[in-house]
Length: 330
Ligand SMILES: [Zn+2]
Image (cartoon, rainbow, N blue to C red; front, side, top):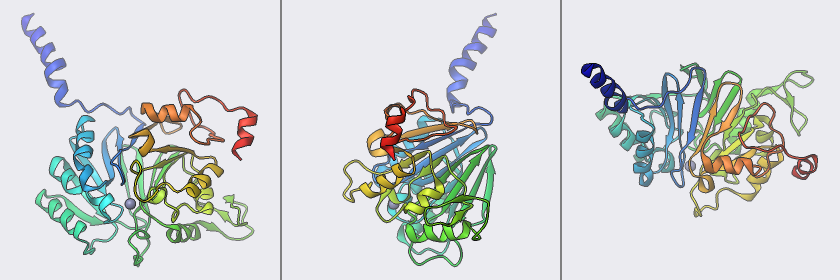
């Protein structure tokens, strides 16, 4: 009896904390857009493992590591670095030093950028492979398909335009991560998904073309919401329900740009921002998306800076907008 009680105590109070990674239910996933100040870092958890897209700047590395540890993460199955800018790769060495990493994926394996070489050194020291990923590379993790849809070869000169663009799909829910892709890279992507004139498929865009670009429920907005990303046509093609902007409070670049916010509002996206809402956590069961982090949920409940239509999206606490409000959005 005493033994049984001791065993129960061990299992519940001793054993569990060592595997305290909270379970992600089968068929679900969780997206955390981590507040790393001015930069990008996202943790995507599935029932069978996790991936990280970008690692924020070096001076936020402690915050990033702490977030993942607090989530009970022991191993990062795949680490994607969209490009070698400090605000995306700066925390990579700290992550590699703190967690097991299956492999690191980068768009340009031959990059000579000092930040890239540092990361590569850290990866080799930890025995993690560094591999190249470009358009067409794809993976599967915990029921989620993880596809790279840009850059195309040969790689563009401009590093931002060569950002890894990732399309994650679980059930009918899609999430798009565009790194710091600018409008030139967006146009190239749109061209690839453009349907022939007269085609009946796809969706019409405001320039009269039709696109087969997959409509996405979640968009990690390009380049921290700068004016050099998120063209009107690209926003129309992606048509996100949630647009997440990752940027620092009162950052010196003035991100996000007022014009970008207008574009996102015009296509009916609900805008969530790490500078205002802190770490933004969205969950999905493969059919609907819910806002989980309290500040972002409050923003969503207050109308999300212009949610005009959210078909198929469940946001706990999000009130229905009246017809008048809907009109005022457009
Ligand atoms: Zn950036």
